[in-house]
Length: 353
Image (cartoon, rainbow, N blue to C red; front, side):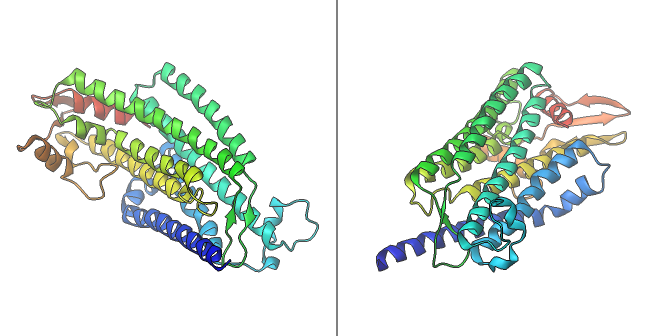
């Protein structure tokens, strides 16, 4: 019995560490990009882009606060008046431990589903813009998206059965294996949509590279993949896949332990990508005689400022690289001896929102 208790305590401690690391990473990235957020979102005229950005970022930031607090602190039952909405069959406002944990478990699932849904919508808009707002691409993604959304909602509803783990601080639940399989189906559907977006972005990046030239005249294919956001989609897909695996191989207390991590990665990377789009679009607008250096724009997946792409191309090619430029002079656009890919990618960014 003592050994079993020790194992449960170790699994709960691991789950707590993953929760803290995930939200700390998201909050840290929020703080270091807050200046860009203020410049490109708060001080500009309200737009659809800003609305989606705030929905993505602050749904994750605010939604994880009560979930994280409940992970470490057991609230008095009498203080949970608002949680009665999750158990309407109760006639008393005082909710017992099992009901409180079930309510938090349900609330956590709602936060996860809501966050991933908003992120997926922004991904759909991004891919749609990348393909020049093609109606065929939009229709295909909407059909796939609604089908996968139905699977996610059904799986999340069927996988709600859980039991509280007694004797430990905070609210921790464990789910039977049958519920884990249902929840795994929801994350599998989400992984499928992420993979679809990744594949479409990668294909568009590769086709653009093939059409406009080789590495001799343009940035290498690795840089194009990173710059066009395919690397971001791959990172999010891998995070979702890692969480998917936990439902099959982890113990009952660790199944889905990477859910918060995958959600925070999605929020962080999507916020980075949207800020990068705004920064690149802002750099392309200006008065006459403005030179736009696309290499000085931040990557959505690189956590440092300017100069990265020049160094990256230099390291890959083994020689100094001359950054491609798009020059606006007296209201007319001119290009250097290497037009094509970068100008086209810039126009795609301008159409993104």
